[in-house]
Length: 87
Image (cartoon, rainbow, N blue to C red):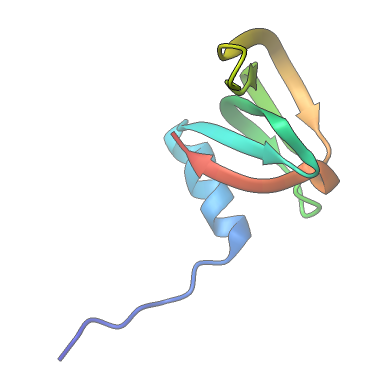
């Protein structure tokens, strides 16, 4: 018999990333040119995120290389979050 698959609620996924202190890449809503990387320090039910060691990553284009700008600790409003990916 195959093992049963269970659904993982988004809030539990974010909590597991927080517990593991995983570095994450956060894709922003309607901002295709850059992403935020860092470690999730905290969050709430609206998916507002406190991110430690945040870095703004401007993605490479045909004419420019990838650029990284350190931001430190930031509060990212949940409305801006499209995707959270462990790096």
